[in-house]
Length: 314
Image 1 (tube, rainbow, N blue to C red):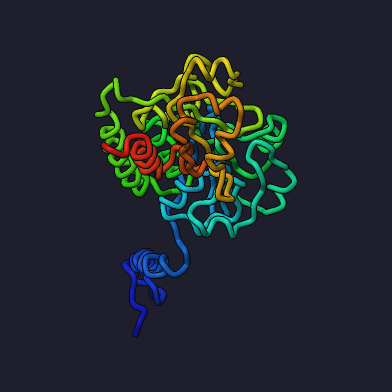
Image 2: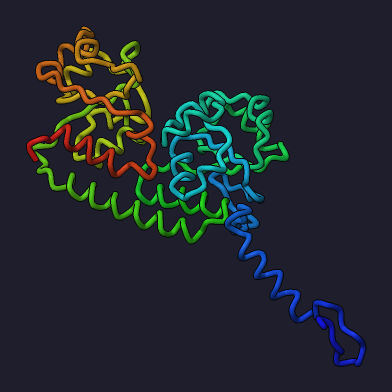
């Protein structure tokens, strides 16, 4: 007989109250892996814009920003991503996700039509009018800080982990990323000042817009042991022929166009760049954009690759 007498003498049901909780807890524990049960996300997080956001369950995530996408993947939640921005190409399986275009030229209609229940967006997502509309939607949106330092990467990971209910995993990932960053930057820091090469980063060859101070390209050059002669200006600024001759860069750094270029012939065939020391040595370094300037989990590897390209003998 399953039932019995309660303390008040009445016949108890088949599942006394003291056993119901234990049985339910055991069932949940056993079913959790197969049912996709996850830890609850933080009830509230404060994002990069100072907004208090309730992220909710986060079962259908849209990520806007290559660093954001890579962090979600590193936290083990990549399967929850249902759409990405154009720059999110790592890991490779992200290229098979619906693509919402460039994160600074967002279409609100396109985003909402994919029915995400959480949007994790880089702080510089835009345009401003689209961002204002996104803030007003019922879909929670958490803006992730843009910060070109190892501490900035840690803040990104911590905020994203809290939004997904993965705080413990976030601590592990942060520790691993920071240690790798410390080692890579430490190796590059050993380059003697007199050996450091001047490196200029260009977005493209049409306007020769070069990276100045405050840009992620400037930061990666410095962490890799290089010097950025454009650091006297903030942001991206056109570099004139006279200015480039004066700066005398030893190497030109550019992003891959995804088609095998740009090539040294294309870059140093430019009349302005042909007059630089970099042209004499055909010193062109091409790296994938998201890998090089994303400041995410793979940044330590990018620092190491750039340092090796600049100082192969060391």
